[in-house]
Length: 224
Image (tube, rainbow, N blue to C red; front, top):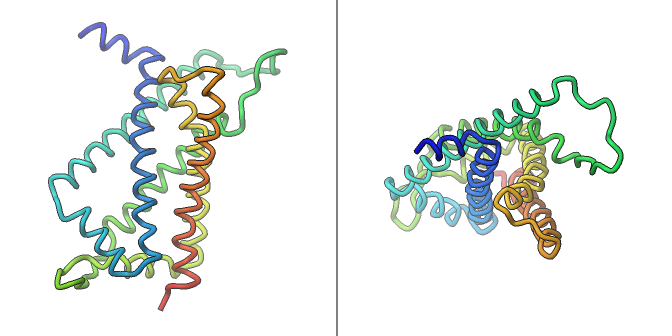
């Protein structure tokens, strides 16, 4: 037990927990984006999808609990690792040492994009998870009218702009985060590291554009 606690407190342990929790959210984000694409099909299809997810309370709250714990763990580990890095070089680097690989912009700004993404998650939950409740009936089943809620929210150009910018930064965060997660899990080799990098970029672009396309569609095409 003591060995386990010591490992969790180590930098390697913290990075591993960040990797696992980050990949949990990576999978959720992809699934959430794909499900939300039903908005392009019809209001009934989108509402039925939302109802199917929330109707099974045990599964729904179980998933929410895992996501919440993963998010809290991810944020705490990120803060502790950042503090360790800062304590190790309190003055900062006056120059880039010769022969040392320069950090990418994505890696240098992870804490900033992460903070913005965290704010976006809270903002998004407040608007859609805890927002106004409208009801509709689909095939004789009464359910929450999430389509109406979405069209109402995305009728504001400022809301659409803020959503699009936040999702763009999410994609930027994911681009480096996915690569770093696999690296922390030991998947680092000249043969497949380039494929992981390409896959991370493709994933980030698809997720960001997929999410951004939804408010743009609502604002320009689907509003009453």
